[in-house]
Image: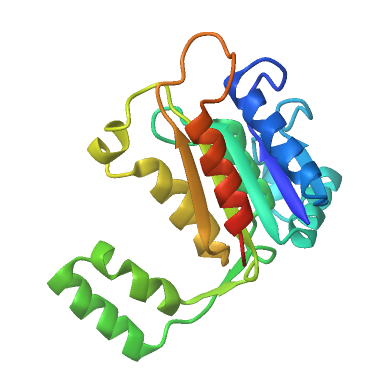
Length: 216
C-alpha cells in the first residue's frame, strides 16, 4: 500500500499538482493500491495544541497514524521553501510522527556513549552518520517502510550544495530515518518557475525509475 502525502496549496494547477497526477497515474497503471493525504485541501492544522501535547486524543491524527501504519511505501510531494519543508508538513510530522507511535527513546549504553563521544571528537559526528544511525538509542517503530520524496525548487541545482543539503537533513535523516523509514529515494526538480505546463521528460523517467525500485 502506498500513502501519498501532498503538501502544496494548489492541488489542481501547480507544478506539484502535475507531480501528484503523474504519480497517481503511474500507480494506477501498475495496479497499486494507494491513499492520499492532501494537507491543504483537508485544512490540516499544523499547530500542536497544549491539550494534544499533554496527550489528548485527536480523531484526525489517529486517522493519519492508521494510514501511515497501513502503508509500506510513503510518497511525499512538496515544494522546498527556504531549503526546508512547508510549515504544514512540519506540523504533520510534529503531530502525527509522535513519541510512542513513530519512535521511543531508549537508554544509551555506556559503551556506545563513550565511543560516540570519542569518535565524534576525532572525526566529526556527521562523518559517522551511517554507523551511528544504527546505534542511536531510539526504538524505531516505522521500520519496514520506505519513502520517495519528490521536491520542487525555484532555485538552481547548486543551491542544496551551498546549504549543506539542509532539506535532506531535515526530512530524510532527522524525521524519516529517525523513525526507521529506510531506504529513502529522491527526485529533485530544479528551476521550477512560471506556469505549470508539463513535467520534463527526464523528471518523469526519474520518478518512474524510483517507483519501480522502491523496496523496503
